[in-house]
Image 1 (cartoon, rainbow, N blue to C red):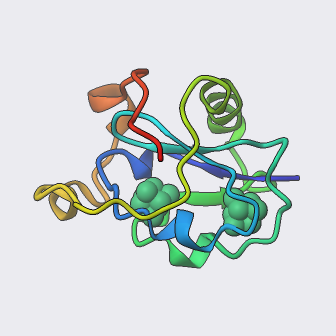
Image 2 (cartoon, helix red, strand yellow):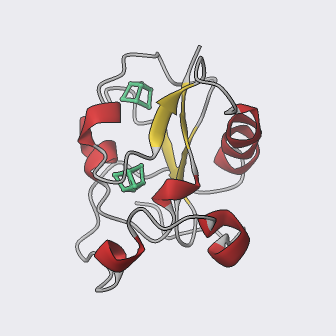
Image 3 (cartoon, rainbow, N blue to C red):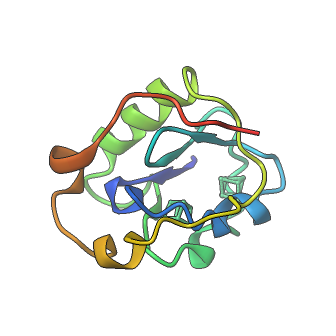
Amino acid sequence: MTYVVTDACIKCKYMDCVEVCPVDCFYEGENMLVINPSECIDCGVCEPECPAEAILPDTEKDVETWLELNATFSAQWPNVTRKADQTPADADAHKGEAGKYDKYFSAEPGAGD
Ligand code: SF4
Ligand code: SF4
């Protein structure tokens, strides 16, 4: 089992999640994060920290697509272990917005740390 990041994360970058992960298994894309499913120890600590409710256990319904995305891009994007210095000014405006994957997903890597 693992936890996965869904497209609710896109454009957040609060990164409250990465601060609490005991095994540093978050990876950073240009505008969202993913979890490496083979590194996640399923502790669940990150889930309540996420203000966008973007983190779900893989036992939830309909997370297969996100599990695949997390596995694919955690192998391509850099590791991130510290909260970003700056949250985008429009982060709150995109919180809870529907269909963010189709509108904004970027396969480009983030900066990592
Ligand atoms: S706190 Fe949630 S929405 Fe923000 S970067 Fe982490 S997983 Fe994404
Ligand atoms: S469930 Fe635990 S190990 Fe997995 S990503 Fe969240 S904090 Fe890290």
